[in-house]
Image (cartoon, each protein chain N blue to C red):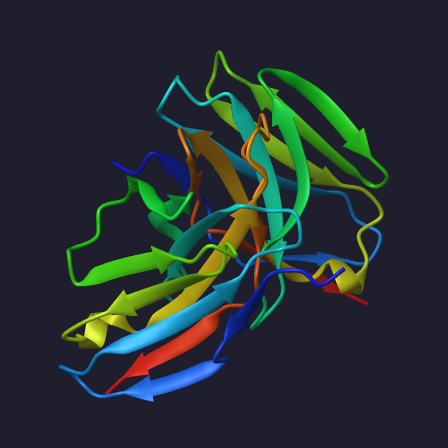
Length: 109
Length: 114
């Protein structure tokens, strides 16, 4: 079993929709939870990070962490075609980041 | 302020050959990590360098080795290349002391092994 599980999608939504992306994990030692966005043929770009359980909002993006369920989410409001990318969840495992496989998101105009 | 830079952008090698990939970290960063990202997968941690020493290593064979220079730039070397080494190799840099281990990624080097 992988330490971090993420549905690869693809997830296809119309412009303006609310998008929900999720990851589950097995290692209860993880404390920092991150979401990266990766466009085709580019390196991952950090979107948001959250420490321990709770919510964090940044513009159209909201990150949620539920450590009791080992479940994290990223919500995107008013999705735009420019949001089309692969979204990677990541968690800190010591000095390294442990990534999910990434979810491909397509926002149709 | 330049971000993380990597060279070359693309590389094609044949099985059994050796390859060296290079990374310059973001200004002010002294820690460099390397990741391998196979097609359709998330990045997998190879190793991390700090103060010219390998600080942590992931589950990769000894064919993968690295080096960090006094100016904090880094190299990733892969010997005896296998077809399965074909991937995007990502370098990430971070400032020491970042509490959540924030890592900034470069654009990657795409390695194809034939």
